[in-house]
Length: 533
Image (cartoon, rainbow, N blue to C red; front, side, top):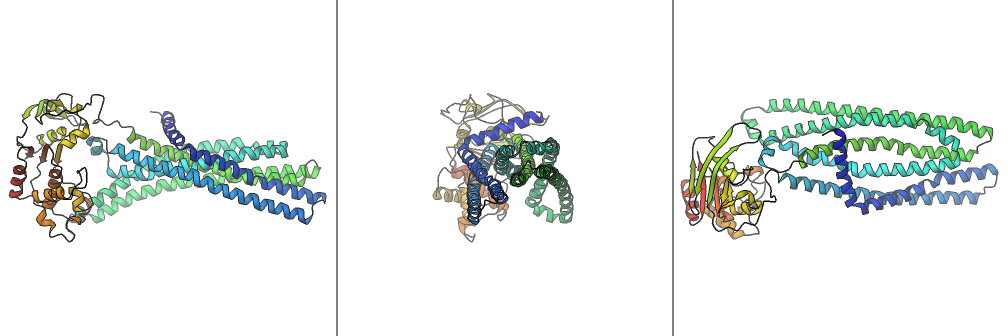
C-alpha cells in the first residue's frame, strides 16, 4: 500500500472518531470562535485609544473605559480558552481510551501464529507510544490547527479592512513558509516512523531481559545484556536527537521568516504613516494583529509535526488492526446442538504458518465419548499440534476435525472453548492471587468450585502453607511457586470449570503419581485426553 493511500485510510479512521464525538468538537469550535472574537478585539481597542490621543479628543475616563474593555475581553477570551481545552482535549482522551480498547480486543482475537512472530515489547510500544501520538494529533493537533485557521481568517479580514496594501505586503512571503512546512513535514514522518519502530525493538529487548532475568543471572550475562541495551539505547537517542534537530531547526526558520515579515510591514507601514496616508493607530493595530499571528503561524509547524507523528503511529497500529484473524466465527458458524462429544480426525494434515515442513499428514482417529486417550510418541512428532488444532489455536481445513459429528469450524468459538478444559505444556499463571488464577475460567464467583478443584489437583496441601492461603499473590507468571505448584494450579483451573472434554498436554510432568491418577479417576463418565512424550 502506498504512503498516500495508507494516510487516506488512516485519516478516515480518525474522522470516524471525530464524528462519533462531534459534540465535543462542535463545542470546541464554538469556544475557538468566541476565544478569537474576544482576543482580536484588543488591537482594535488599542487603535481607538491611540487615535483618540492623536486627535486630542480622548479623556482620562475614555482611556479608563477602554482599559476596562481590554481587561474584560481578555478575561472572556481566557474563559472560552478553558472551555476549548475542556472539550477537545477531553475528546482526545476518550478517543485514546477507545483506541486502546479496540486494539486489545483485536489482539485477543489474533491467532497463535501472530504471537509467534511478534515480540510482546513491540505490541506494548504500539499500545503506549503510538496511541499517545494519535491522541496528540486528534487533541492538541486539531485544537491548535482549528485555532490557527480561525485566528488567521478573522485577523486577515480585520487587517484587510485596516489596510489592504499592508495586508498584501504581509502575505507575499507566505508561500515560502508553506514550502518550509511541507519540506520539513516529509522528513518528520519518515524519521518518527523509524523512531517508533526502534522503540518497539528496545521495549521488546527490555521485556525479554526482565522476563528471563533468572536465566540471565544463571549464565552470568548481566554485563552482556547491559552492553546490548546500551547499543540499542544509543541508537534510540540518536534517532530522537535527529528529530529534535529537525524540529529545533524548524522553529528558528519560521521565527526568522515571521520576523522578516514584521520588519517589512513596519518599514512600509512607517512610510505610509510618514506620508500621512495611514494613521499611527491603524499601524499599531496592524502590528498587534501581526504579533497575534506569530504563535498561530508557529503552531502550524507544530501541528504538522503532530499530524505526521500521528499518521506514522496510525500506520503502525493499522498493521495490527488490519490483520483479519484466521480463527474466527464466520458465516459458516451455526448453533451447536451437541448430542455426543465423540471426536473424529479425518485425514488431518497440517503445516504451521511461515513453515514449509508438514507436521501432520493424513491423521485419522476416533475418540469415543467418555474414553481416556493418550497420545504417545517422540518429541516433535505432532502430539501438541493435534491438541492445538482441536481447540482451534490454528485454523484447520473444513471437515478435518469433528466433535459430535459437527465440524469444529462451524462451532462458535465461545461454545467450543467452553466445552473444552485445556492444560498446555507450559503452565501460565497471571500475576494475581491463587484463587483468581484457579477461578479464571469460571463464569461467576464460585469459591467452592475453586477449592474443590485445588483439592482434586493436590494443591490444597500447599495452600495451607502459604501466608495468605488462596489470596496469596503468585507473582508474574507464578514466579513465587515451584514447577509442581504451578502445574497443579493450572490443572485446578481446568477442572474447576468441569468441562465436557479435558485436554492435558503433558500436564503431569511435575506432579506426583497420586494426583496423576486422581484426576482421571474423578472424570469418570467424562473424557480426559492426555498426551505425553
